[in-house]
Image 1 (cartoon, rainbow, N blue to C red):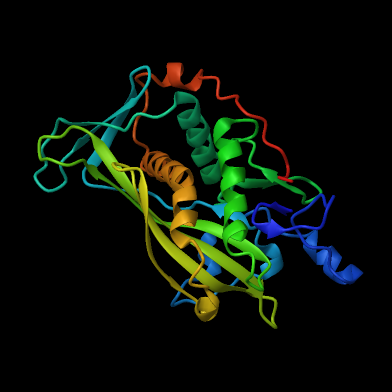
Image 2: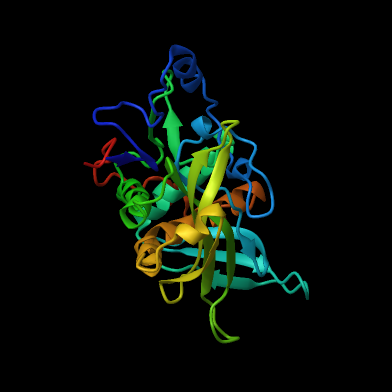
Length: 294
């Protein structure tokens, strides 16, 4: 059984493993509420966070790159239009229609982005007063939230043979640009992401033993496997369906692209007035999000 990227014992109420002694158990109940994916390090930089602190699951912390300067976001009933200025020529009047998506899903992702900025955390989970982990309140009982939880179960379904304790799916870059031909008014995006498999070293620091690199293209809706890194690369079996894992995470990668865009627009204080009232009234309630998958 797995929840939020970690293998759990049955009936456990927390993603934190039960430590062998009381001192370690006390440590596990005093984790910070903030988690930044940068603390995991990367192929060239060492991690700085203890393994027990990492909530596992999914962490989205990127801000989108855009090929023009956004000046206004508009919601016209079922989709978004982004107005801006060409940063190279200074030309005004650029208008790009963003890809169509389910309004309830967009509202969930908008709320998740806003909450991540307020809490300064990249994790898609919340910690209660007892440090128990659950899906973020921005995603609770929504279709998007259920999709996040389902995506979180996939890494260990494909690589259940690795001697690791946690998986974390993180975004590594999001780029929005004009789609296709020069005259296109549609904006599309690409999302880079990694599936990390972690365990603690002798100092209890979270070490990425294996990372699988992917890129999602919103125009085609497909995911491309780009490679891997980590100490356990040699343990990656040829029979492992890394392409299948990537394809299973396409929906999550699409969501990550939207979260990164909403984060960028809020960080840059881009006005969102036209259609905002209508958008904020959208009922995002959907599928119930269980604490765990059995």
